[in-house]
Length: 496
Image 1: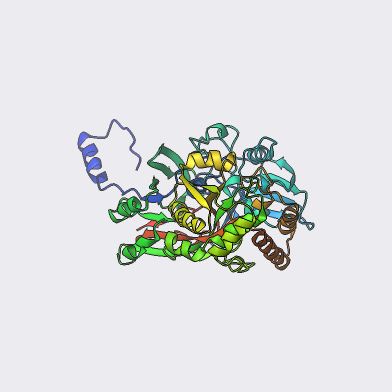
Image 2 (image 1 turned 90 degrees about the horizontal axis):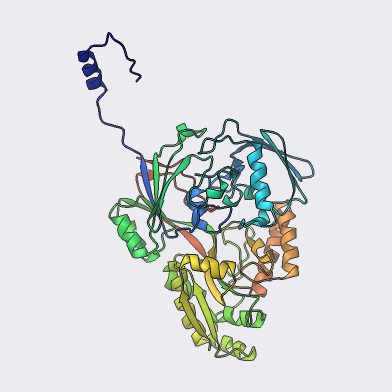
């Protein structure tokens, strides 16, 4: 209602207008989400922490494309696209009238900047491989982008939906680590480190009328017991990725909550530093794989709520090969293998991040290696330390981590500078074939070959596929039950 000033409006009339306009204010639609992991940065194009994507990708930041719950690629900042007959040239038509949260306009120049930054020689983008197939990026006009590839890329449009491919602006990119600026349905509001991060609805988003939430608050609670207490006391409305499966019966019996166990793309591995002795010896790695007992790890660390894996590929995927029997658990055999490799009785350090699946698994693996004659020293470290020392500097023997990105077998083709320290020309060539094969059936056969090769070489100890355990209040609708990608769009979520 608009009130115009007029010399003819009486005091009584103003009082009546105020009375008629008085009434209960509309309640703010607020959602509080619990997360295990707090990132050290808020820029997904410069930091590999999965929780950045979980909070901000396709919510604050947007990309040319997005992904539906079933994995289909959909338009986002690109309203449409065409692909040349040879599969090498993609012409994107961009959405018009889009603005960044700081008021600057979005157009093809922003796409050029974001891609050139990601492809630059000194790029710190955690998924530079997404951009490796690109030969050129051109902008014939403000609403058109033409991307030409060097070779076919079976995952190109899918990869362009990920947080690593967010279209960041030159005007604001330097501050994105702490104050993220994007074009999405939610704007950054505040970040209290060690506690919470808050987003608010972007009223200027092009589909703002479809967004039902006014405010979203992420609470960082890594300790499972503390997380459970916060959920039960109504401090949290939803906790996707809940880390305490042993507590599920309590929530299943409570009518306030819906409990779901879905799937993710997250392979949990006992990663070994292949560039460092004795892990550069395939027989040592095979001995470690023989010493570990997946069923014991899943039962002890995940209370049975996980699916074992024998290689680096999700069991729900169309190309899955069951390789869990490649190294049957046999402590005595493993002990002999360690003796034959000349490492029996040595100390191996197991440096793990502060997540329940990792710390619990580490204790079990420590005992299993001890039974096989290896002294495994467990070091529990903070996430920032893990990122710096393990991920960036490769300063570790073994670690336990979930790789949550989809289509990420290409990690094994990233060369010795990646934290695996793994450099294998055959695997690199195989991934090149996989990533350029656009025929689905042929690509699946190559993926099967890749799984077998990684298992045979025991590059890591392949443990289990991370489940998507979600505890959500029954009045909250719209959360994805499974995670085909790292992000969870918030625009479609409602609170009754």
